[in-house]
Length: 248
Image (cartoon, rainbow, N blue to C red; front, side, top):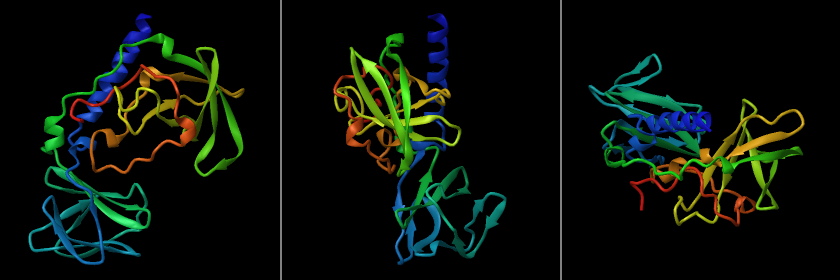
């Protein structure tokens, strides 16, 4: 029990430190959707536009952006090709993500003095409960269905439940879910859970004490997926993170 509590507290401390990162989700100040018409924004240098080829920034006199080891100075710069992760450009103490979303392009600046980060009051969570560490069984699909790779079956109160899972590059499983606490004590849209890779015979362990919020729980400037209808649990998962203190 002491190992469980100590490991969980260390994990939560690390999670809270990431949330307070001056370049993390709480530092986002806007999400700018680029159009073919050049625009300037208050929170990032340059004049920005986007078309089917990617994002373009035009920097004026004295404006610079740093992309990796490359300094972009006055002039026109084509940024791309871009995917959902995109690239990061730095300026002063701030950064901005330039990325693709469903065929459109975004610029998402992150400032260490963002109002959302300054107002953040922490993330409450349910008391640790080893009873919410549940064994499960991973059943892989014959072929991936979109990005879903299979389902995790587990028992709660004598009834079997199933959750659709997505695969991570390291073999871990990612699960997005809702439950009877959603919109009451936990964020309405979703929570997420990451498991260790299943054993060769499909054994997997679900630790709902480590269920956490998606970025959309912390900022209006995130584009988070919703769980499939099948991943709505009829009972309350009274474990893991609750609605952040800075959100209604």
